[in-house]
Length: 82
Image 1 (spheres, rainbow, N blue to C red):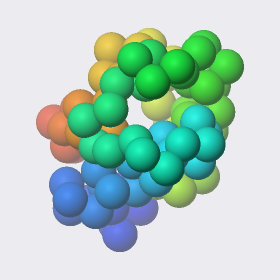
Image 2: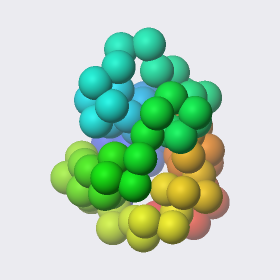
Image 3: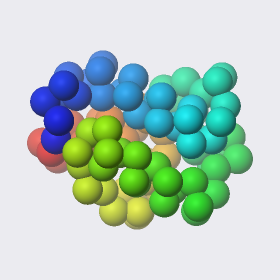
Image 4: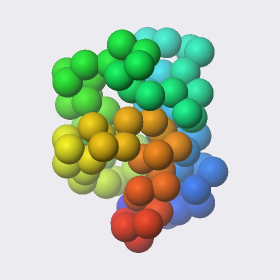
């Protein structure tokens, strides 16, 4: 993982920005569930690619489905020690 995002606060902020950019919605926050705000499986693919580009992490699609908010995904990444 890009060491710039090792801190949970920075990582969550980066993921929130990714959610906003992919969904083209400025009012998404760290607790916004991807699917509750209209996200689709196509958005999941885009998010996986953006997470790799920004954070340097190679996530599985399933992990986005299981951790559908920036905050939840950030906590999962931290637990994995990625």
